[in-house]
Amino acid sequence: MDISSVKALTFDVFGTVVDWRSAVLREGRALGKQKGLSVDWVEFADAWRAGYEPFMQRVRTGELPWTNIDALHRMILDELLVRFQIAGLSEAEKEHLNRVWRRLDPWPDVREGLARLRRRFLVAPLSNGNIALLTHMAKRADLRWDCILSSELARRYKPDAEVYLTAARLLGLRPQQIMMVAAHNADLLAAKAVGFRAAFVYRTREYGPSQTTDLAPDPAVDIVARDFAELADIMA
Image 1: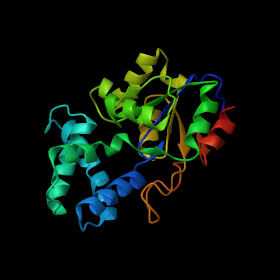
Image 2: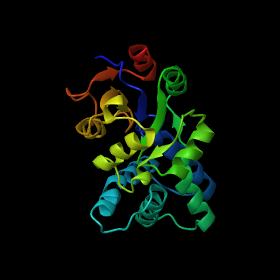
Image 3: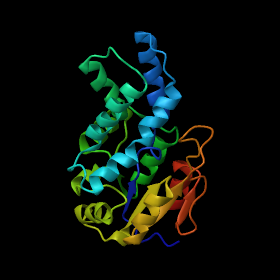
Image 4: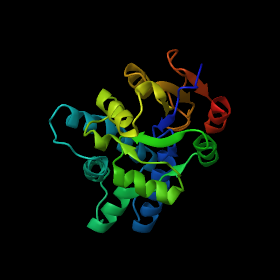
């Protein structure tokens, strides 16, 4: 593929850049040990993530007003605390647990791969995470973005076309000058539908060893890479 016209790479974050599942498991287990809780933290972590799409859909349909991801995560968490019979947490402890999504670690190949890509391209997240979440995450995880782009800027959630078009407008670029990088085919296909290029990066353990989704790229994507290092090689 001719990449001479590509000026910027935008990245899905949860699952593509950062390993959300390991962090939620780690902090959940630490909390359980501290509080003497008997909880299946694997089931808890997967249930928390599973609530993400249905709650965003409630915003898309107007059932909920515009609500950012920090707040949606808290709504899901409050339901899970009841479902998993987790009692005795103070408000401060609940809020700290909710903000685990700001404390996610990048996959091992990310920092070096981003640094290499950044030499030639603008690099920015384009995530459903809100700006505060993404900024705190980047600070803690040393993710050296050129800027922070979020669906919050469009007050829509991916895969709504307006999220991608708003990112292009704010970068002062045509959609065809931007490549979306993600481990999720739906995100990439939505970006391609408005003119973005699309790069699929494998994250076959995002959901643990029994993952069944996004194990292979859709044939419509432009570039396929094992990880960010290979993506940097391809884009060099």
